[in-house]
Length: 626
Image 1 (cartoon, rainbow, N blue to C red):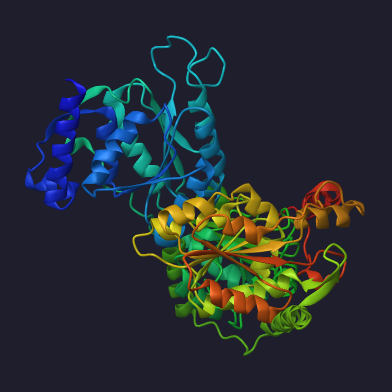
Image 2: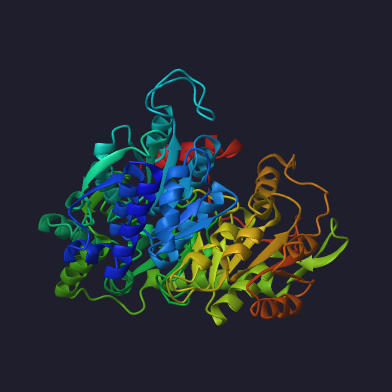
């Protein structure tokens, strides 16, 4: 079949699907015959459309021209949308944010070699935060005629497949007839009910245009079902006995507990427990709830870390116990029993002294609540445990308020008083909540200060990549406002270092119609690492510079971007935010303080197994033995 015939038949199929109202309708009505002769690339796009993947983000190259031709024809019939961008990592962040905020699926496409490597690096975010993303990666030809340009230069087979299999699940379409198996494994991965992640589909350049006879009935469409509650009643009774006999119960809520908000609120009352939140689920219970001790860990809060240190019973909900979240496994020195509710076996058995309840967090916790209600356990109101924790929460609130009352400090670098990060973040996040904007946090000091400051009243206001702490995630995430079927306004809080790693959002955001604002907090350094160096070794080394950058001019050099100087006060920053809201994509430059004054940051209240703290932290961990 010549190329003209291929294009004609491909175009007609796309028109048939569009007239039917979608691929599922076209299949069910018989408008599309059950058996069709197509290229592997077109079959792949048909399979992804049937799974609801209609957004494609990335960069074309010689390793993806055939995929691009299919996308061109199908986009012409408005069956999908392609978003060409200027960096594959940016594409990955945008697709990740889209899935995180809206639930919509997207696919990243790249060429062979460096582009695929960039996407692989960005996939650290969905891998860590449990978000399902498709990756369509160009790969070397299967006939091994000699080295392919941009391949990994080794005389071995399937090298990139090995790389991607390390990051997530992967499949190489060496044999075109295996497409439907690849699509099923991909669907099982990106729609995994409790541990979704990236799926890497490697597409050899010579198999993409290969012709196959596709049976449309083979295209997988049913997603894996969610797990139910843990079934074993004896374990529930053990858990209830442990809760009733304990005096100081703390609940640690991880990303796997996102759907269990109502059950968590009820459990806190029934068990007389207090909650420790993780950055991934800010707002799962309201910030001002009387049992919310806020974040805990090596960058936790006074109240959060007090609850962790003093608790004798830990109820863990959908958490992986990332090092900073549980002080490198030293965060619960007095806990005698862990009740771990998690659908993942490894996470559920992370700690010793554990009563594992392996199942869906919301369903399992709901069943636990039923038993607690039936027990009708009488507790004093308020209990001594709650009273002590609330006193620490008041101490934490006073600590925060002191920083907000002192929003500006003199900074030697700027030669004047400038806003502190806590003050700037407080203004920005309050403004976002008042204006119903979605806030994204970049890595570093901005992120760490941010999750100690945000006051979310519901889930879904704040998104922070605390798993990979990927610099440049927040600004790239703003592109998701243009990808989303239901647009929203985004606010990206980013440091100068994170922004300069992914500045292409200024161009791609305008190209695709992003709606949001970058608040660039500039201290001309990697503040989080400078602070860590000072705390550990009393010296700052190679984590700052004296290069002046006119970020307002930089942003304004891209036609369509509006930029403002955020000034030196909370009023000037708030005024800039109000001005930015009426523009599509904007940037606000805010000089911020860095120095030794404790009012310039939110402090550190936990342990961490890093640098010269390792020996002592590890000694504590093994002494606790949890």
